[in-house]
Image (cartoon, rainbow, N blue to C red):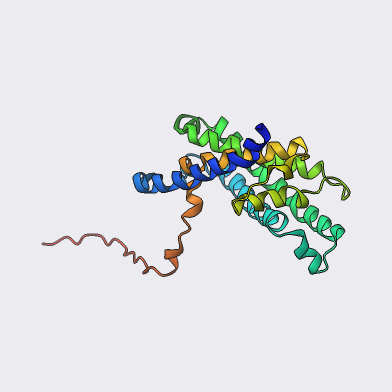
Length: 229
């Protein structure tokens, strides 16, 4: 019964909070819809950690789309064998995961050691970092613990479960034999999606597309005032 709630009901509770929370915040807190950049408080660690994290997480996200949302039948139809897929996943996934992990740990260290950041940090800031650390480290651990190509196959378990959730036909039975480290990763992801609308993560949906078509901002040099006689 608990398993059915965990994997069959909880995802929809999180999805409701995720969508409803964003709508509510956009309607009532548009001025707070920002990444809350702390660059003015500390630059060096931010530049290093943020670049590693963002580049790494983009590749990690792409790998999740390829592995979880695209059915295994598609790869078989394209002639991609299990060994080939597994090799590609490891070659691309491990460096990306390590980059994201190192980046988020640098950002966590920065948040914990820079006094000006400690004073100005909110509960949402800490919540975001903690959830991201758990998500990334648990996912990276699952990858390292599943290097054996004959080991656990998430494409025939977690993949179909996720697609069943997204098509509103959640089937919790797919996760009945999933290893604990994958379960921790999934629960951490659900946690971060539930917290997402109430943290700085909302800036992900604020891509500055209008910058491409907006008019140029013209700056004029300030000329010294002339002394009039």
